[in-house]
Image 1 (tube, one colour):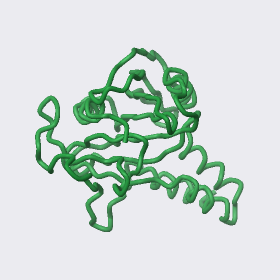
Image 2: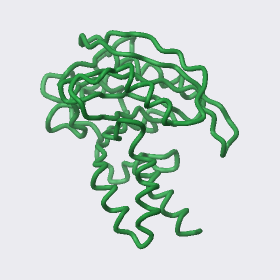
Image 3: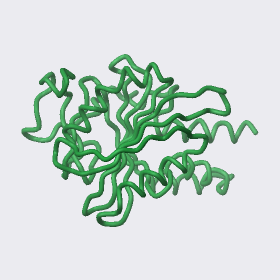
Length: 226
């Protein structure tokens, strides 16, 4: 049982669980693309921008680009590599199953996490990507929320990003059976020629979620095709 706990904690750290910062090497987690806006420049709604991620050569190479809030740190996730490593452990089947549960949600796979802890918050803005050119964003988002389990009061709406992409956004409640607590979460899905992209904002609790919401809005308003 102890080994299973270690595996679970290790995999949680891959996605930057609340106990792990993911930046122990001291390197900045954002590579701003050329001309994307200098650090400290004003973002939308008065949120300072920390640069742009998503372009080739940035810490998270994605089908889209967007600004992240100042002091937040981005880290790419190579899901296939992590799954391969997990399957090679002594308890390969269990480790692979745990890895899959952390790295995949519905039709999308974890590709990037942006850590809010350097900015004084406990939570992440995560990016998930999938396959299928121009996949229906609403369908992808509903499958994403359903796969999380223990969700309720989902409210969907059509949105358009500042970069001209049409998408679907949802606010919903997630209840942790382990902690017996309910918190608010938000996600946005867009379709691209390289497959669907989901931006997800969680947080330790609803209060942290709301405190981080301006960073999410900055990402949404600057979101465009890479």
